[in-house]
Image (tube, rainbow, N blue to C red):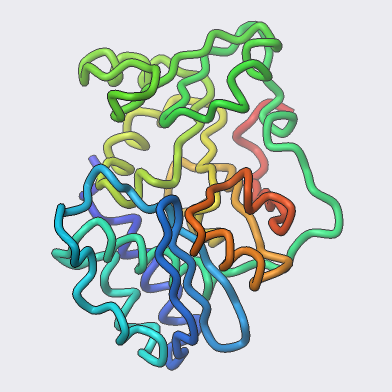
Length: 257
């Protein structure tokens, strides 16, 4: 079994190696996402888990102090004994440092999975726009979701059984924030294709070598100003989409070719 926190520590180590002295130049915390910009005008995103936030008028006591701070300080939020919102800021900072260049041509994440009617797909986190596309391939789809407001299996034993029998697993990158990613990946070791997906996804190729993940499906900004405006105004992925380019990194050899 992989130790809890292993993946987050690996991401932070990679970001610190890539930019040990980087400075944060802007931070936005919205209702759906947080955005962090580091010097060089590199933007990273991470989801805000509103259900995990403490009630009260002061959601984040360090507000007003983050712009100008060293990125290393925010990165350590991801691995420390910190709040959900602090972990979000840590992941967004890592994503800003580990940013890829936007691709000239976007690839389709679902097509890269090469789904067939024989596949058993575990969707960890509800990706609504992908449900009909997956079902159209004839594959069996099982949605695993912790949020009681969204559809999906919520009982732990059922979730474990589905993950262990899946041939393909789509895993939300928010699993890095709620501490579930190692347990999920341990149970998908038999799958032919495991994708970490969403704008929160760290696009670090090392993840493809050190974990069962063989596909990273994230995004890169082509207009930081518009993305930050959407974040600040409470928008999510659909509102950011015109200024995002989807990025897919794959480790060849695990999926059927």
